[in-house]
Length: 185
Image (cartoon, rainbow, N blue to C red):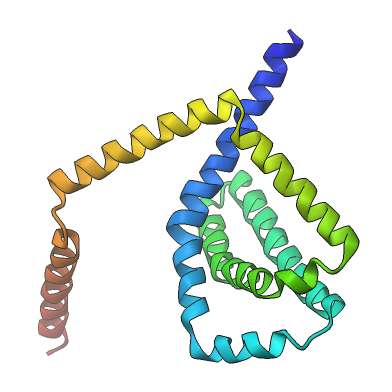
């Protein structure tokens, strides 16, 4: 019985991690992070960040991180209360801020690692993530999600050839614009 409960909890944990990694990070946050990283303004800020003391960077990073997590929790509460649309909008609005927090962390990681308790916490967390990635449950769920992603890509390529969705959306936009212009005239 105990093994079954542990297996179920591990499956939920693995599924949550893969969902975060695949859905949130890979498809949403990573492109925003890369966009933010490419901005010239932030490249100048990156140079200035290197001159800040580690504790200032930690305070800044943790402040942003805590706010982002609180917004996520509030969005979850709204979803549970039945305000799914508002919850989704609120959750989506936190993504650019979270991407900025990840950027700040990557830029200041070397300085943050100078704080011993932060370094210990970070290494502990990363160790647990690595352990999780090597479990049988993780490997099985990852294999299934990879198959699902490949099937989605295959269906997308079959039914929405490259650029077709964009062309369709543009055509609809142009038609709607013509209709609204006629109504205004």
